[in-house]
Amino acid sequence: MRNLRTGVIGAGHLGRFHAQKYAGCSDFQGLYDTDATRAREVAAELGCRVFPSPQALLSEVDAISVVTPTSTHYGVTREALECQVHCLVEKPFTLDLQEADALIRLAHDQGCVLAVGHIERAQPVMRYLRTQEFGPPRYLEGERLAPFKPRSLDVDVIMDLMIHDLDLVMMLAGCRPRDIRAVGVAAVTAQADMANAWITLENGSVANLAVSRAVREPVRRMRLFWEDRYASVDFLQNRLTFYRRGPGAVPGIPGVVGDVVDLPRTDALEEEIRAFLAAVRGEGEVLCDASAGREALAAALDVRRAVDSFLCPA
Ligand code: NAD
Image (cartoon, rainbow, N blue to C red; front, side, top):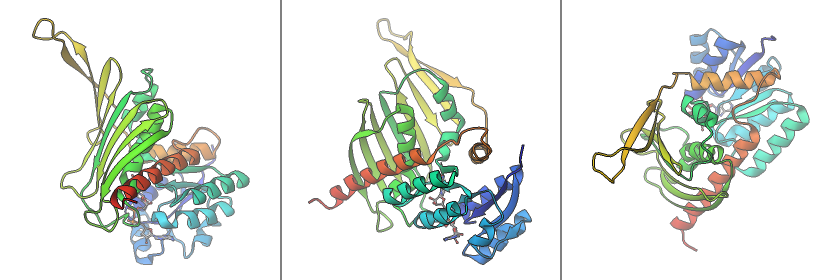
């Protein structure tokens, strides 16, 4: 098996973790960041090289992660693909669909793997649910609430957080949104920092998603309802519990029985990167390909349009 030469562009909060994972499972060459001080700090920790430019890095690698602010994903990824370097781009894929489509075409023309970092797909709970044959959930509730951090502020909370749940909802339902109603408010920044979306999917299922990046305690939960059971997912605790009707204490009134599923503890980022590298070697599939990343972006843009019309009625 060929040991791929890898690199990371953007060595900030998340880029440092990408670099750690590549260093552990590939021939990691090093990193590039426009902030040379930050690049040197991360390189010192990992004992790897700092490249003076993206071009210098791209000439020595087969595959990279793009972990820069979203507004730069298009330019950085285009340059890498033009050098025939395979790319795992952090979410959100790009700022708009024109950029996403241009990168998808370029990756195809260059024969490159192009993956998007929708990491929640790598969570054990999602892997478990995808192997079950319950059919699409009829109703989904998601809550993704985070304390305020001065990062990813080039995008609103829909692109920052809700896009994860939009991706999961479409993956679990196996179809796209048909109708979206949403509200949002700018609590801290000039963009929406809290939002709530009511989404009817093409198959008639409904998802209700709430996000905030301005709360005290983090919450990442999802509840999924089928005809005969419901599942409660806690992403932070890696916990999945199924609830179904059972014998009740009062005759004639059913009770509820909970079954906890024993899930393995895994490293989602490492799984995502290993799947990406396997796809580059032609030995597997990425967890989220560029088309799915584009669909999540399209849904997020639709939610934003609904929020904008709520904030600024025509
Ligand atoms: P960050 O601000 O901590 O890091 C970004 C780094 O990119 C900084 O060090 C900055 O100097 C560098 N940079 C900026 N422009 C650059 C360029 N043109 N070339 C090279 N380096 C450049 O941000 P972060 O939290 O690490 O987020 C980075 C990306 O990861 C964003 O797209 C964000 O949405 C995504 N992200 C995804 C998840 C997830 O759950 N998958 C979580 C956090 C962040």
